[in-house]
Length: 114
Image 1 (cartoon, rainbow, N blue to C red):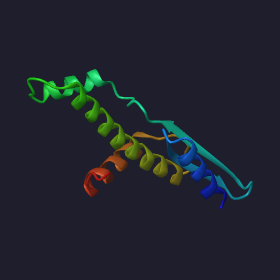
Image 2 (cartoon, rainbow, N blue to C red):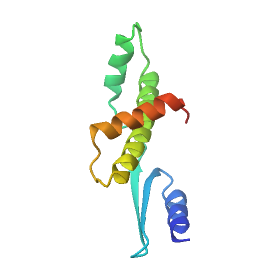
Image 3 (cartoon, rainbow, N blue to C red):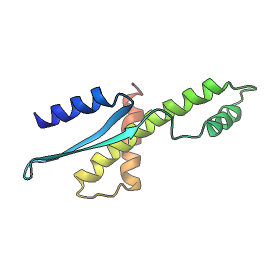
């Protein structure tokens, strides 16, 4: 009930935020929500422009570069979330290379759906 209430508050009061991970402890009956501001992508638009040019494009619009940045950020967030789950399952707080590799393999093999 507490988790549902907190989730409702975050999604309805702070519409420009996205809930990334909800952690809860049964012993203390506490909940912590990690929130990420999602208005602008954290990936550089100029880097996306260079990637498009390296792929062979003669010209790239700014909107296309922004869309590629947003898409790659979504994929990166899904990989990071899965990698965090693997690390926590292994009893670690630190995400290691193996966690990222496993998560990326899982995402790529299952197909990229949003």
